[in-house]
Length: 114
Ligand code: DGP
Image (cartoon, rainbow, N blue to C red):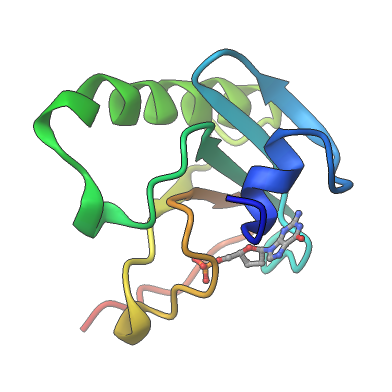
């Protein structure tokens, strides 16, 4: 997917501060952080959104969460807490159509889901 910015970051063709990478996922800082810590954890394979997730992707999505947990600990978020957010589709404000998990924390966040 040459027109996908996250595919280009994963391939090393676009700049980003890579915090973690393995054969399944890549993590890097969000370019527009909304909290002191704002990291994106992204599957290396292009999946547009949760709408395209299949049963065989369950292990990959579990791995995304495990990597996010390690990054939360590495950034000192474990005790105070953090959010893991996956925006899906226009009503949720998804703007990059390559599935990604937001790890946000480092300040208290209001509860906004009503
Ligand atoms: P979402 O709204 O859930 O689709 O979030 C997409 C996020 O991706 C948004 O917070 C900004 C971030 N982002 C967009 N383009 C780039 C980029 O080129 N580099 C990095 N590091 N982050 C990006």
